[in-house]
Image (spheres, rainbow, N blue to C red):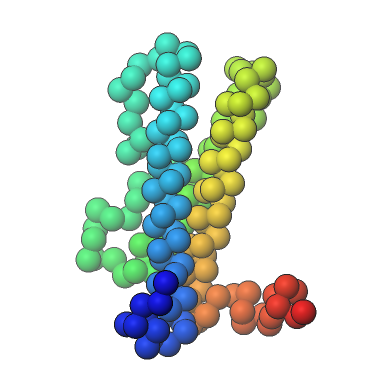
Length: 151
C-alpha cells in the first residue's frame, strides 16, 4: 500500500514508521496469545481466574505511567528491559513446565515456545528502533549489507 505522506519522508523515517507499526502489532498479538494461554492453563489447573496480565512478578512494568516525562528512547529502553525480563521468565516457565509440572503436554510447551519467539522478535524490533533513534539507522545496516542483500 502506497501512502503519499509516508513516501515523501526520508527512508529512516519510513523505516522507523514500519518498525513501530510491526512492533505494535506484535505486542498486541503477544498479549492476546498470552491471555489465551493463561486462560487455558488456569482452566486445566483449576487455579484462581483473577490472575492479571498487567503485573507479572519479575517483569518490570511498561514505561507508560510517566508519559511525557520520559523521552521516546528512555521509554523504548524501559520496555525493551521489560520484554527481555519476560523472555527470561518464559524460558524458565517452559523449562519448569517441561520437566516438572506438565511433562507430557507438548501442545502447551509449543504454545509457550511460540510466545517466547514472538517476545524475542519484539525485543529485536525494539533494539532496532533504539538504534534508529540514536544513530539514524539500525546496527545491522551500519555494519554493511546483510548476506541476503549481496546476491
